Structures are given as C-alpha cells and as structure tokens.
Image (cartoon, rainbow, N blue to C red; front, side):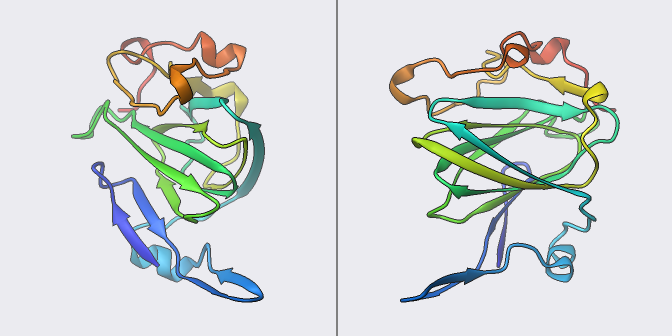
Length: 182
C-alpha cells in the first residue's frame, strides 16, 4: 500500500495494492500493523455503508464528542471526498483537501478525528463504505455548510447544478459560526 500525505498531512490518501487476473481482483483494505506503521494507529468500532444517487452531497459532518476518525472508500461509482480541519490548534485550521474516490481507482482516504467530512456523488450512483474510530452519536453531530464562501471548496458540480442536500445540511452554519475543536 502507498500512504500519501495530503496538503493537510494528517489526512492521508491510501492506494492499495490490487492483484487481478481473469478471475477478478484482490486487495487488502485494512491491516492494523501496516496502518499503524504509517501513522494511522486507531481501533475501529463501527463500519458504515451508504448508497446515494447522482448529485447528492452528504456533509460536511463531524461530532464534537465521541469524535470519529474515518477510513473511507467507494465500492461502486465515484465521489469527490472532502475533509475540513476543524481543530483551532492546528496550523491547517479551516483548510480543506479533496480527492476523487471511486470503485475504479480503489483509493481510500483517512479522515482523522477533528475534521468535518463530506462527499459529492459524481457518478449515476455511489456506494460509500467507511470505518469509524468511535460510535455515531447524533446528539453530538455538527454540520458545516458545504458551500461556505470562506472555505472555497472546489466541488466538481456537474453542469454547475446545485447538489441535492438533506434539510440539515442545507441550513448548516458557516465556518465562522461552527463549533470547532481546541
């Protein structure tokens, strides 16, 4: 596996080794020792799997308590995946990184605790799978407005058309008004 630091070094893009032939392919997506040796030394307590249609944007979400690190990947389709640093003590506070994750490129992304996370579906549909370092706690969940002009996230919106959002995500606070970590 290749572990590639992003412009925010704590967010890591992971390219697994894929072994394929006429029968299909095999790849390892998690191995505790290898990940720990590459700076991702966490235990995972929950796996999630979602399916979304084209044009849906989920996020940007984070939890103030029971903070979650997420190891994310796409098993069908293609998404643009984004992490925003919500840690005031960080030199990259308020910065974001984003990558295309797809079933074809098989990339994964490590989103550490203390980051808001979201994705936009670029294909007809996408199945998104992720491991979490803590349990989902809706009472601690926060949202950050996906198109906050201060963040300048360069979402690859198809034909410039606004994404489909949940009611919660449509009214999320802007970065300056959002809760942040110390």
